[in-house]
Length: 170
Image 1 (cartoon, one colour):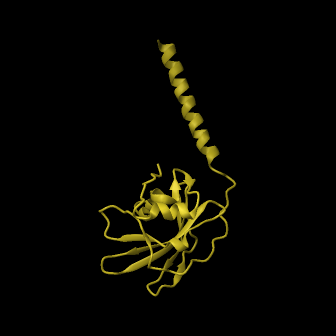
Image 2: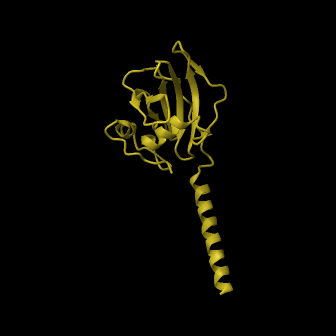
Image 3: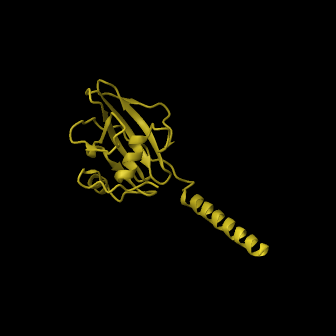
């Protein structure tokens, strides 16, 4: 009986190790981000709304004209956040579905001018609520699991209010 239990434990440990190695092999250690184009013009009309749930006072929308899937697999976009009082903020960001990360490249001033983020860093989509909008975008169309959506058109279609299939990141 003890031998059978030992074999079972060894087999389970091997499965866990194989899974960990598979995850490591899934990550491209030679991956490099392509040069990031400058932020596109800020548009506040025609935004595709994100479903953020009921517990947020802000409304978030993606400018469909700003959506790009670059050769490095990063989905770049302009996200606009608006409050009930009419205040607006915009961010130029990217999502890397393969690693579950996002990066903010620039933020808009109240005058509508872009300010580049100094030394932007990739952060987890689960980064203390700072990325709820990025996670929502990943879940609602930019990512299917750890794979980037097949096209910008597929992302736009998934984000249209009548679609909303809710692809969950995990």
